[in-house]
Length: 294
Length: 270
Image (cartoon, rainbow over all chains, first blue to last red; front, side):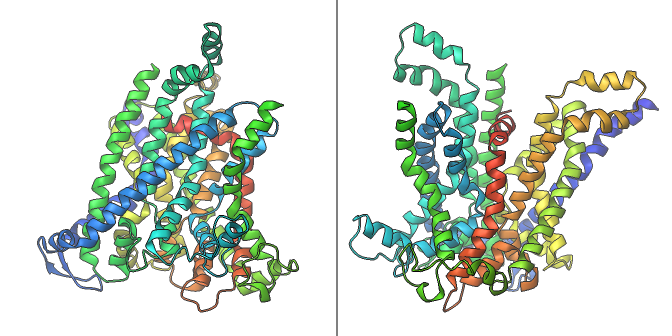
């Protein structure tokens, strides 16, 4: 009797949390699957079986490849740009100096702004005539006349990437700081005794010890940035003429603007598959870390 | 001394970058109506009244109430379901434990945008479109993995002996849970709850897609509705609202900063 009760208890404990997650993941996934094979009208009603119609419509659309390519540029630039800034920053923030806590807090601050509101602020700051970035840059002598940053692809997309980097730095710096504080201090002292200089200590101690944290930060950032919707949606809605669309904005437009519900379902499943691959990479890295730690 | 000066000098550009959006918000919020389209940073006078007029002009109170409601309900549901799940994961052996972990991991990777079309249909089918409670529940599903993860990694650091000692004293397992275990876990619960709250507070896609009528809008959606598809945007009110909506979160983050470093890394790397 007691035996029986014991085996049921953990399932009972896990069940409520599982049900919540399952309801919002498995059921919509099932819906997406059936929509993708359906003959769906623009109001989302399934009229019958559509076979691979939606799939072929998505795969012949040049917009898919354009936004896929832009998603790659978007993700790689933000993840790499953030890494290049966050690594030296966290090393400085790890050393003791006067006012360090204030500096740490300031670097965490962009995290507090919701992405939608950050993007709204960017829309104001990047405005051609009344934008405060223009007046700051003219004041600093960097540009001579106003630039309408969001009006053309060539300036809008890089600016969106910069906003994305700003939003990603706090989380990444936090992970790196945690990594740096996990490195035993006596390693550095021993290296100093052996006569290793600062660069050697960084190459031989800091970098290898930080590997697991760097791996995790890179994989998680890749997933977050790949999924990131508000920055582009709020600043340009993928415009002008779809030139700043990435997969997520293209998906949202197909589903809720253009009424291509079946094709949007296919796009969702493509994104799901890509994310599943990222998750597998993450699991492998995390398992490696665990083994490394033992 | 030298380290201090060098550190601040090297960090200066990044610090300016991080403060830039706050400066834009704050300075724009203080502009008088007549200088809205003047790109200068310093207005001719500081219109502090904007912060009060904004309340009416942006319908701030209603949106604030909605955001508070959705975030509170979602946080409560998340924590209530995550505590038992995290406890089972950290203390018990059972079949399917690894599968459950894998499921949580995948759910952590998915963002609402990927499933939004399916979620939308779920809401339509359930007749729950434009329902704040439904938005809170969907958020709960997406917050669950992180909360379970975070709590599990803290729970595992609480020594088993403490509970066992309570059992020896004759306490039932629920009593020892309530009197011994949970009090020790309070810091972790607070951090996890705040994180869940902020996540929901800032959530965009679910609210954008499912909330239809203006009286149900959360803060990000309400503020977005004031700048999209309008001929003239009252930027001073919009920025005042953005600033006021962001400030409490910024204070929480500044205060939690220390816990974030240890909490996130133990959760992420384990």
